[in-house]
Length: 133
Image (cartoon, rainbow, N blue to C red; front, side, top):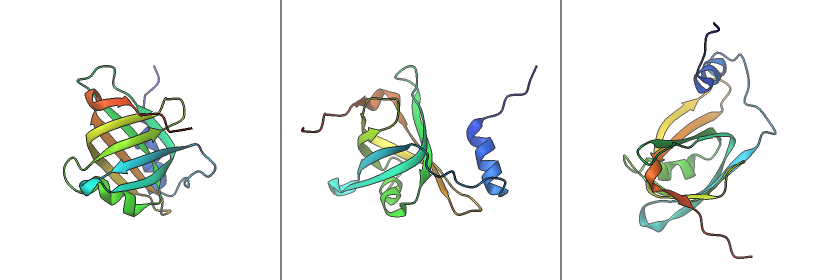
């Protein structure tokens, strides 16, 4: 039997020990964050990894690499800091999460990359409205 490892933990360790660098040219997710006072910020996460819970009682989790500290600040306004007005990630339809999106983890690698993990109750997930054509 072969040992199994958590992918995110392995990547974090490799980055922290300068064994790998932040990959370039990877797919990205686009996020529109609606923070306190209905302020909107847009940013992207490179190399996104989205795990959707199988039922409404679970938690959806999105992790990836970011360079935009200002947009991430909207997510740290409180325990549950913002809504996702729109999340577009490879392999999924655009999602929206009304409230209670939180910053689960923020990790700065030795090479300067910022890896973030966001989470929200799966029961709040919905399909984002289509953009006008």
